[in-house]
Length: 72
Image (cartoon, rainbow, N blue to C red; front, side, top):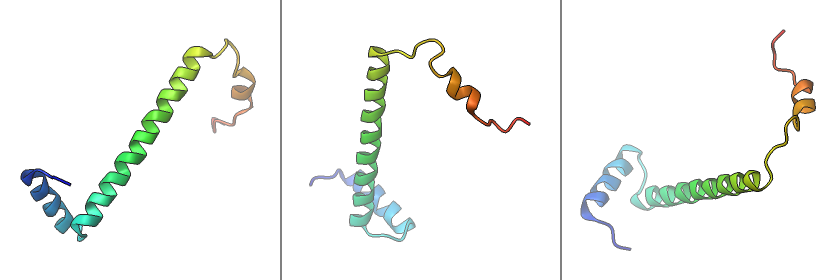
């Protein structure tokens, strides 16, 4: 893996500040990016689904009326 010298210096600095190793820091960063990408993919799929099948007027009225919104 090739990493720009300036980026590697920042990684090393942040690793020291977090009292972890360079490998652990990079592993954590990669895992976080994979989780974020998965979330973005899910949000895109949901948006596409609602675009294909929009919510009908009144579709959630029963559900909304059954909720306790803590407004007593």
